Image (cartoon, rainbow, N blue to C red; front, side, top):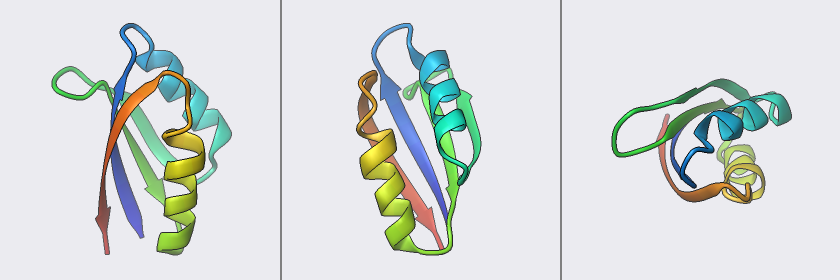
Amino acid sequence: MRAYVLVTTKPGTSENVVKSIKEKVKEVTQADSLWGRFDAIIIIEAPNLQKITEIVYKVVAGHPDIVHTETAITL
């Protein structure tokens, strides 16, 4: 399964957030800063929804510089 996590960060922190998440989570296949409504996108590939949920809630949403996330899951 693949999840696209759209992230809003505190001002000026998107690059640090992307770098930190890439280093912490092996299931993150890509993470980039964006221009536009969201500050970053994180792509997660995991074998099941439970693992994706764990990563999104414990690692991504728990990051102190992340203000908001929206997750789109593909099957």
